[in-house]
Image 1 (cartoon, rainbow, N blue to C red):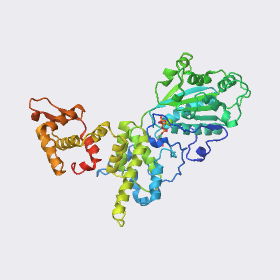
Image 2: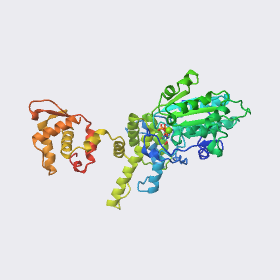
Image 3: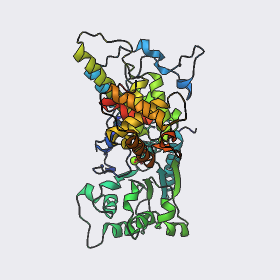
Image 4: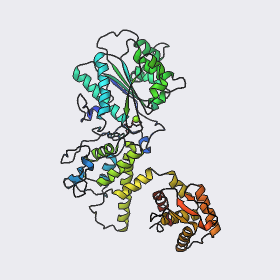
Length: 490
Ligand SMILES: Nc1ncnc2c1ncn2[C@@H]1O[C@H](COP(=O)(O)OP(=O)(O)OP(=O)(O)O)[C@@H](O)[C@H]1O
Ligand SMILES: [Mg+2]
């Protein structure tokens, strides 16, 4: 991976000073539909994190975290456990600190696993600045792949680089397009109308003023370049595509000094909505942010947690989260949300145990473990099958429960008569009046129609064979949440 040229940004003052005199920033009061996590809907500005590092710095390679030692124990960063202070899940401050470290709005001090993408964007911006040439770039990628986070870093890096190189300072305008009342407001933001509080002169619109500005020769050779980051740019798509088109066209005007970076999810947005730019040979460059891999998610989680002076997660649990999230979407927001949810499950468990036995001492293993993570994952990735099972009438649920028990021993199918026997046992042990065999068969037919079981054809109803069409784990998960079935599934 190429390293990013220019200074690194471990210092947070840069972020804190994001609203510098050369910077217009628009916050995000509304979020788009595609957002992957409700937690992200809180429109808090990025919080800053102090670089509290583990007392021992751990040299890491990408795979170091998941490497198995000869004794089968994973060798991880958490091997520094003994030098970290004791984790106590009952300590509210500790809990709060871990939750904060995992919160989407907490800007990490380092953005790992996006060095390549950031480097490419920064090189593009540097190139435009060096040549005093306008240009446009389009960044796409699925939700939660670090696009907005990376653009914030690139913006700071570009400003610092310009300063370092003695170039005229870079004016930056960062707009989250979802925050605009109307799409054309993007032009007034660029014009800096809001910043100065001045209204547009004469009757010309902000767009027209920009067009005039970029069509005339610059008065001074030291004119500043302007970096415009239009995040969630798909919000600018209007029926006639006018706004989006005019925005990109600003970079093609003879004396333009705009470096435009558009950010959105769709891969083909530029092709679909900006065909004219293509014919003018001004098609924006495209940088794609791929979904995070398992290793990347794990590394990012570890990077965020290693700043804490204690260890709250079992390494295997983090690994499980990373594996599941990468397989599902590669969305970092999801991974963070699952980890927070697992932590909350542990918190509830610990609180419950204190209520029962207030004197119980804190034990070494009261960290987020596999079962907490599994429960959190199940909550997050709840399947429609789970919903269907949970909304079935009770007797049908008992049949589904019988089927889950019947097929546990890897048997693929059973006759209706065999399944009925298990059903009768459950009813008896729960003191529920069972349905007769005809009604039982009818219920199996309903479950067949719902796609939960498969019923084979046979002349004699009792000899029809039943097999499962859904994952046994989904049944267990769905029924475990219903008090009645908790014991049945043991
Ligand atoms: N490389 C990373 N290191 C640390 N945290 C990350 C990283 N990538 C993403 N995150 C976390 O995930 C959150 C979501 O990332 P970000 O907002 O950049 O996604 P996005 O690609 O812009 O998604 P969307 O398309 O939904 O806008 C960030 O706020 C951050 O907390
Ligand atoms: Mg974003």
